[in-house]
Amino acid sequence: MSLKSKNILVTGSEGQLGKNFCKKLINLGANIIAIDKYKFSSNKNVDYYCSDFNHVDKLRSALDKIKGNYKNIDILINNSEIGRAHVWTPVTSRSRMPSSAW
Image (cartoon, rainbow, N blue to C red):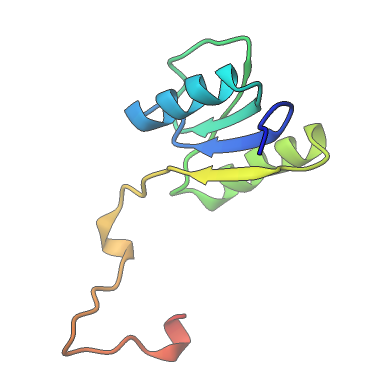
């Protein structure tokens, strides 16, 4: 499958993995749409959006801008971290997650 001219959304684009994903995908001819909390890189081949996934309003705002600029997203690389560990519910073999949490 060719990635040439595909719109690829990369979350966590400024981390070590995200930067390497973006570099490789640029070399394969993809259009990169990058979302991260901070923007350190500057690459004319990447369309950067700053957003924090821990703040839903900021994320919605960034996604609205992306929807306005792109007709479609062909591939999502969800590489973002969530920095607040307390949002996760631990599940062990002795406990069951209630179906309401799904």
